[in-house]
Amino acid sequence: MASRAIWKGTIRIGRLALPVKLYSAVREEGVHFRLLHRADLAPVAQKMVASGSDEPVEPKAIRKAFPLGRNELVMLDEEDLQTLEPEESRDIEITRFVRPDEIDHRWYERAYYLGPDGDSGGYFAAAAALERKKREGIAKWVMRKREYVGALRAEDGYLVLITLRHTGEVIDVSALPAPAGRPLQRKELAMAAQLVAAREERFDITRYRDEYRARVLELVEEKARGGKVKVRPFRPRKTREDQLTRALEASLAGVGKKKRTARG
Image (spheres, rainbow, N blue to C red):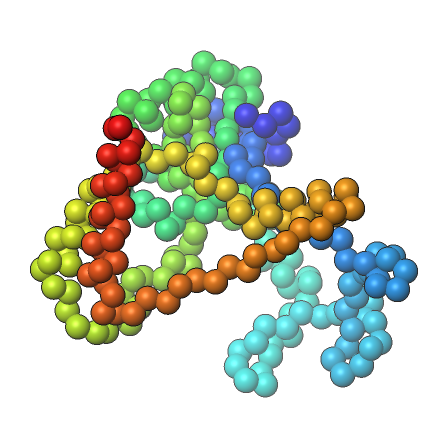
């Protein structure tokens, strides 16, 4: 668990109150660059400028507007927006409990660990109850002037709070265009099912990493040592529709060969 809490609150389930601390359960490991001026390598700064000119605009001279349509805007004042901000609260209200399979994975957004803030007995009792009942709590709370809805679940004896996306943010699969092309043949369906069964194994996240970030860090290390790196561009192969059967056959043959080698 992270060493420093980022927020404190109280889980409320009816009359039960459990003080908790919120910790980040994920961290961003993308690639971040410093932007420098090419001439003297001095850091550059971003500034807001008026459209059609290079004149900088001071923050106090900027107003917000909401687009209604083409060439139509509604002007908004900061005072108006401040009246719409949710009321400050430290309560994490659990409104109901549901089965985990009732929440589609597409709705999960960002995970936080919850740690006890004093009453460790009640905290671990709540975590044990969720694990035993195999249920998740639907939570509502306000944090840093924003309203959240989330799922409270138990993981290895601890409580985890995962923010959920709101209605309208997840696109239903029915919005996708219908598949085009010829219908799949029975032989292709059978081979595809066989390929899935042949490659079935336990999921191990340690086998996957951000390959682009790794290559960037390798390049940075080489540059720092004064060396040069040969970069091989990625070129995806094109696959025609009439190659589906041969591709499935080749994949199955490769899986079989790999398993025989492992046994030998």
